[in-house]
Length: 255
Image 1 (spheres, rainbow, N blue to C red):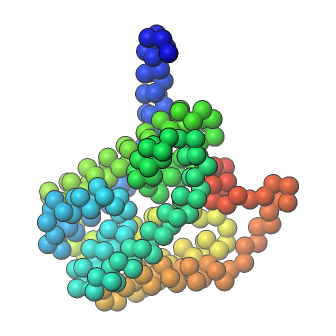
Image 2 (cartoon, rainbow, N blue to C red; image 1 turned 90 degrees about the vertical axis):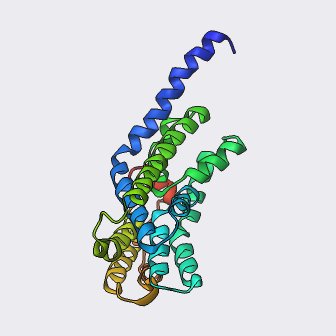
């Protein structure tokens, strides 16, 4: 590659990166608020601030992080907190399956790095926009822009919450933030009657059962939503000539 070609490549790389950042920008305010709520809960529960912040660095899954803190605050057994987090984060198995063909051409180091940075919001953005970037290098830059900037905003929110403490009223944190965060991670996957019923049942269960001990309302809501969705028939009839490829197809189509 010549020096002039390399120089021309730099603006292109920046454009693709910032295109990803702009695509996910509308979802960033929510990340700041939930990061602020999580950071504040770290202080309320009495966890070391650095440890709490590193939780966001390592896990990057706000719904499960807040659910774990709620369980710890209620003196729940560790197994309850862990099971709740596992159930909530099980959705990442679906995201991984949907993203696998998009990430397939990437070098292994980039697959690992982008998988680590992946959130629900950036996954949805990637699925909606990846067809605009048939070149794997440009696609990788776009995904990196969406993921890294969104995670950066989430970490800023967490740091602010850990530093400022419970600026959000305590009743809001426990009574409303957890259900809202739980619902928010389910919304991107709403496609068809089973998913609609599942998220409705899960959301109602989480709110109605908010007084259960140990934060069991989130775990109960997850299981209730899964069970309800399983019993609802999907009335969509796939075209035999254009088989539905699931989550990736729906999100890429912007449905």
